[in-house]
Length: 183
Image 1 (cartoon, rainbow, N blue to C red):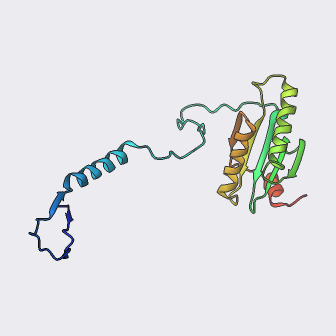
Image 2 (tube, rainbow, N blue to C red):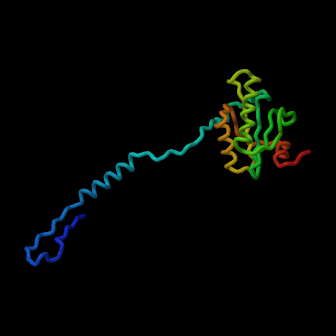
């Protein structure tokens, strides 16, 4: 039981001897119970900060549906390849006949973001329709680190690219390009 003892001072004052008074006791059991009830209540009713995450549209896992390949205008596509040691290489169109690139760029606003925004603007001028915007294909290699993938996904969100996909399929030419071997 929790209680608060109040003492009488314990010493003589002025030489008179007074009758000893009983110590006043305050029972704090109810106060302790109330404190624990309040702590429990607030722990159960408050929401903790929710983790911020990106919404990713993942394909269906139903193998019975036919996968139909779609033809996409090569002027609308940009391929970004992520390699080891924070390496980023991009090209626009097909690798055999690229419209722009292949070129190595740094991450950030003066690197890939600047290129994405300028390419997005040129695709909008080309199509004349904001519904047919730029399509970005992100290809992280096995040597790319997780942070680089998150950084490029952040760039997609910042640049407001409507359509992008992550693909782990590399052609031999793309692998050579990413490793820095030119023919």
